[in-house]
Length: 74
Image (cartoon, rainbow, N blue to C red; front, side, top):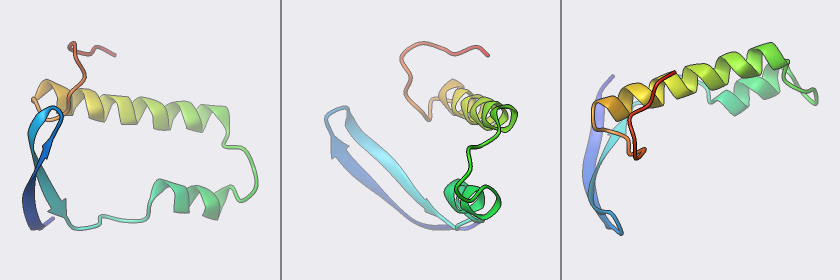
């Protein structure tokens, strides 16, 4: 992965560092449309996606990258 650019945003919570990175693949929405067109996502798969997303956000938060208020445990 290559960093293409970086910049800072001055917002209500102070100055935020932002990174622009290469796209690593299709978006989740595109993949869901491809495999589950006009259908509901199976509950088991939806739970797996949600858990993996939360684990990733928790890891970012633990490293001070993502704001979440309190420390997270899953």
